[in-house]
Image 1 (cartoon, rainbow, N blue to C red):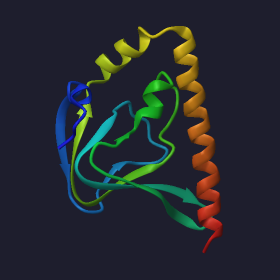
Image 2: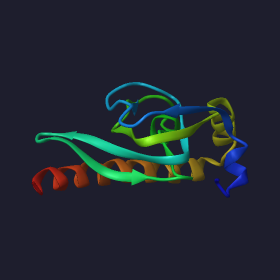
Image 3: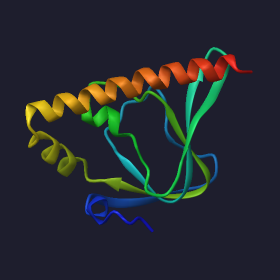
Length: 133
């Protein structure tokens, strides 16, 4: 079980997905943030050579956060697929937004910068992975 009790306070509901079920589809819009409670998920990105796996997330890892923290202006940049049976927590987005909005402008800018860097890194890694075949 997740050790971070602060994170557990944000969970509004739980969902279970069977193996290979798409939880987030790249290119879709959505404002949910998830935390892996049990099992694993794979983060996949479309490339010229098909989908490549960028990462495997495990218990305690969060996904889906970039769209929400960009103030819901973007679309999902990768797909997330169950790797075996997985149970995820769906975070209370209203609470996350409320807490995010209470941050200083400087801290919000730092978080936005980190998100931009994560997107750039994701693009580079997916290009390298597609070329590795």
